[in-house]
Amino acid sequence: MKDYDAIVIGAGNAGLSAAATLQRGGMRTLLLERHNIPGGCATSFVRGDYEFEVALHQLSGLGTEDQPAILRHVFDSMGISDKVDYVEEHHLYRYAVPGVIDITLPASVKGIIAVLSEAFPAEADKLKPFLDLCEVLTLEAYLAYPRAKATGDPEVIKKNCRNFVKYGLRNAKDVLDEFFDDPVLKAVLGGYWGYMGLPLKELPFSDLGVMLYAYAAMKPWHVVGGSQALSNALLDSFLEAGGDVRFNCGAEQITTDNGAVAAVRTEHGEIFTTNQVVSNASSILTYNQLLDRPELAGDVREDFKSRRMGVSGFVLYLGLDCTPKDLGIEVATNFVANTIDDEAQHAEALTLDGAPKGCLFTCYTVGDETLAPKGKSVVALMCLQYGSAWDNVKPEDYAATKFAYAEKLIDLAETVIPSVRDHIEEIEVATPMTMMRYLNTPGGAIYGFSQGIAEHGTVRDRVRPVHGLHLAGSWSGMGGFQPTYQAGASVGGSILCKQNKKAG
Image (tube, rainbow, N blue to C red; front, top):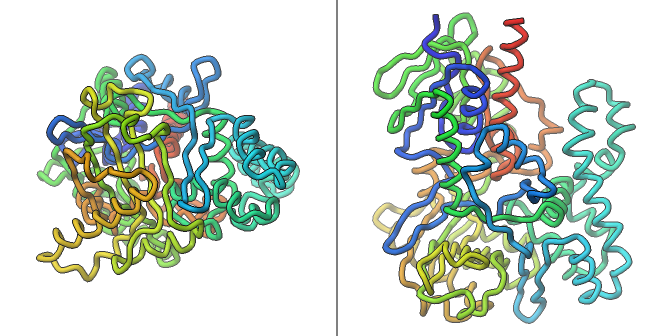
């Protein structure tokens, strides 16, 4: 008899949702986590009077209670709906480039059309057709395409997913150029590119269009208690169903027998037998270091050679001694830049020599003052940055370098939100090296591999060279919170389905 029916490595979003799905589905499951808390990116930490959200800026896919969307159904299936409370954001984002544009998009398709029609009257008649395309792409991407792909028939895909076939894998810049002429309008509509870490010319339009429509139609949300509350709820659901968890206990090796999973050895030398392993670790770590016989994954390791490492981030966690109103902040999510040129903004993520040209200013206390001490605010100020930018920074220069760059980031934010620096009561600075240390990902990558067209799931087939070894998370699909929660639940459901067929 096996020690466990399944073992999940890593208690990040996908690991937690996979573990909860498996255990609640009747499989005896062990969850291993090298950190002392669950969550991975979905955690929080305390400094002084403030509790800081590590990574979640806006949660997508929930929908409303009256019109629940896919993620709410996923959470329902894992028994956490009554364990977590959410705060609805009524705006998608403020997009501000001093001297060029300062505009706020409401969390409503009709509202977006109204606001942008007033600001760009010459383009008004093009907005509804564009957002209609985003809507049908969303429906095809979530519903029609997976079913059509499962048939293995290209003609079925062409017939049932016409818009996805025509627009899905074109780059976002190309599609925006097809619909609109005004470069500022295109920059505003493309504002979410930063959530995926690549400039518009490298992003598949399906990802940008789906994100824009999904947030507008299904609303963006904050989580009361931060994403740590979601992680805790998933862990509670897993434990209530009888699951076992080991913290401060990383996996050291996945043992195989005749090309199939046989056991997992922990860093403490314990060996647990199983024939199903779900790895929430990066695919690079899983196949190159954890697998006892890396040669079994030859096809996957060959695939790595054509992959590009994804972006990381430089983040300031700020506790401010004032309210959002005191700073004139009315919107939680603020894209601030000194140029509408997304390619120029992205280029700065590769170096420390210059200064950031774009950033994301998220004020969590907009809409819910309880997320900070009374009369104060919690803010995350972030710009994209690759781990490679830090390759030549000497250890003795690390602290001075990160604080110098932090000053540049605050300077950029203050071009739109003045006097931020004067109100800082607590500050913590995280670099890609910080992400690397806590997430254990190459280069501190936060979305896995690059989220570009060449890495899209419709282009690359998943390779599963080891029977019983499954990957879940951003390294095997799209990055971000909603996709990784769904990925874990999907992998867990797939394993359960196969096990039930065997039992039947």
